[in-house]
Length: 431
Image (cartoon, rainbow, N blue to C red):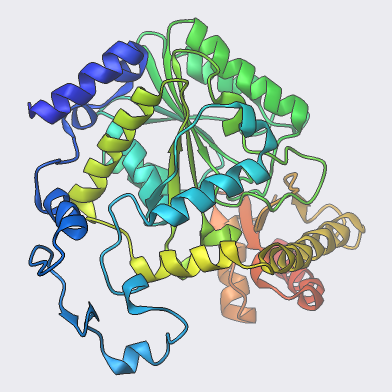
């Protein structure tokens, strides 16, 4: 094993052996090289005042070389903020700005100890880092039965982990915290579980209320007290789009420093929060009372980034940073929030109006981009195909009964026609 990896592992074992026990084989072996091209280039950047012949970019006239056809569309930005490689951990100013934003959006984080976010190539990359660092073949990844299909690819196919599902809703159509508890406690023999909490949920658009949130935290604490090492990951892709009286903070705040056998990890990003999907800017953040442990986890994270994508795109990090620093940022974000809330409320009003009888029932939703219809008497795939072939309308079929509808991409004035047509398609199939 590389001496740097060994040193990081010794730090983790000293600061919290439970966290060390959570690491995968790759997580234990990975490290960020301190004596390589990047470190030598960084040293030269501060000391090489005459010529800096260390890093693989081209310069001209003292700035990164660039094409006029590209720069002329980006004249608001200096070439150094676009063309140079970003550090593996991301632009330092962006990392700091995002940490400030996290505390502003989650006031209870102010009293918690957590690291500086590391920039990822959006949310999927952040989850992939979690999988690489903590998931080995056979490890349990606990998720609800209504989930984003990429979890299977990221944790199951890539890393060989076992996907353990529990029903998202209980009999009262609230979050099934008892199901979560049972799924976690069932991993006692393995001694380890990775739990992914995705709120607002994709595909249902559901976020638990405050009491449900406390029950989730209690379930994870119970698992830890039963001797299970829990990697608790909050996938906060749609964070902030809370339209009703649900949790309005990430559960990361409550999970941080919850128990020595719980490692809280927050994966979030500008992708959907700031409506910049194609920019691919996300973040991964660890919580711990130990600064040394946080530093060791960051070094291992940088090692994974260095070994996979080397570093994230610089231009999009610059764009997001500029947005976060803009005086108009909060106002503009609030305006988009109101549009999204209006669409969600219109959908709920339509479905609750009685105009569709009992044909279009739905799972509870209160946040995010999506909602799910629960169909009976017809399959979701049959409805999806009829909508697509006969009416030119696209939806997502999930399993036998669930049809996911993204109201996020439908203008509010068109929602009535959309749901009327879905109703019509279901009736035609029932007939």
